[in-house]
Image 1: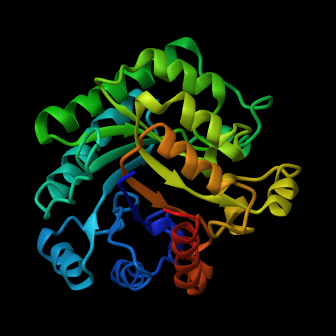
Image 2 (image 1 turned 90 degrees about the vertical axis):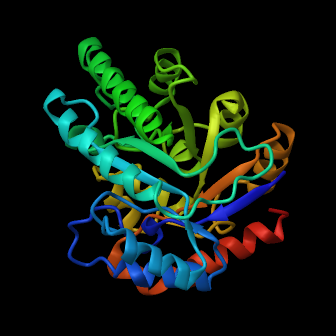
Length: 307
């Protein structure tokens, strides 16, 4: 395996760029570098400025490269497509002008990636992790989302050469087993790859090892998380939004939770995965004073088990 480990701003609580408690993006870059990471994601659109000179200066100062940009938004509503397309242009214009991230031997597509995540639906947010409760989209609404995903994916690839990857996410309309299976039927690998997230899979009642194995041929990129089982069992009994559950500590440093990373390492070797893995630990940004400690523990643990 040739695998590189990256980080993401959500480890510092950066999920909503309008949250008044977010740490400065320059601090996030600095602490990621100090913890031993060589790459980092941009985080949600609007957090890191679309200013090539400023971003490049911070990346150079901290010996980092950008692994991916993210669209974390409503992929369903027709009236939002223009806004989504604008985000594709803005993000891809930035990341393609920054120094490229080295491609690992055997990597299917070069970084940087554009990660597509459906988000922004209150009813589904409260049903995160509950496949039996969550209301599914109508056939027409699902088809609209597929049209939008294809449009955004083709825009990223044909205009900028950026590989789009779709990220099933707790609290969005691509979360559960039936929805991921339908996504794989409707969006061919030629159009977009998969970014599977071990924590979101577990949170949404799926086995991360099994899903990484079953989706190996569609897998371009992976997110690693870990889950505190005691907190998880608690929040599963509450009427709670996904990020409020994260604020309670449902996500923990890698190696301190329930997910078996020794088995995942063996599986990734078995399926011949090469490329990038990004560690994430969603949290309340008001607790970001412990982020450096936690991202340091996560990367140290993964190295201790052979990553």
